Image (tube, rainbow, N blue to C red):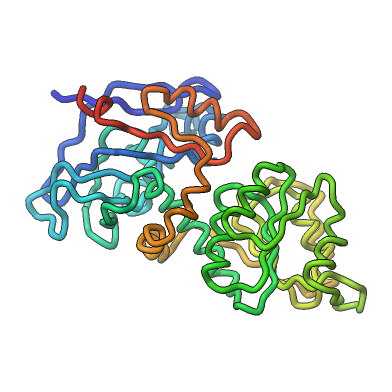
Length: 351
């Protein structure tokens, strides 16, 4: 039996690189040799938990990790159409019938090979051109999350937008906003290196909220307006929360003008400090953004077209042979912006 290496949760805050059976496709399946896979904050959440609560009585069990893959087709089932060996593909982790890849299902993409169940082009898998590097293609899934957030915002070119959080989703949202023609996008964070990246990918201005007066800076950048009570507020039209901290939510509420919109795309940390009542002062519209109902493969051709801009989101490229170090990076606050694990021919040849 052929085997492969796969990453799953180990002890709390640790991974385990395990040897498991290499997948064999059924007639409607395909097998992808993974060439790059991003590490997501969701992976970190599972590592903090030490697995997933799927065992008896809710006990923790090991969970296969990885849901941001790019690779090439190496096997195709007899009933699969539109795919050929050698095609470079990205995968929809939510398209697996057995469960979300790397997020509770039995399959994980941080592996040398991945089974694509019910391989249907445009639903579970999409082909991308040879001109798009695998590491940038591995951004497809998080950029779909960012694209859905921007779609939910309904931003127009005349809008003035603030993005809180210069992680991959916030920066991805910034790129999509500018490609959408939005007039002015400000990115807010507390890490100077992330703010530098924000400017590099097209943000019109940045604010270091640890050292600058947010309200004063937004008023300077977006002009002055008022809330529903006539109190002065910055002229920002849309706030995007890609950070998930209660302080961010409250900052949007405190600064919102009459009729502003707040889009939440980050996983929110529970807190009694959130000022929901303050939303009345501006008739603030709260919009939730979850996943990518239609965007998962809508973004793929644009990712290829604008690959140089998206490539700036990747701070670290780490070989699969050093997977432990890759996950140590993402577990260390502030150590990395976006880590992509790469799989070279030497890694694949052993299977």
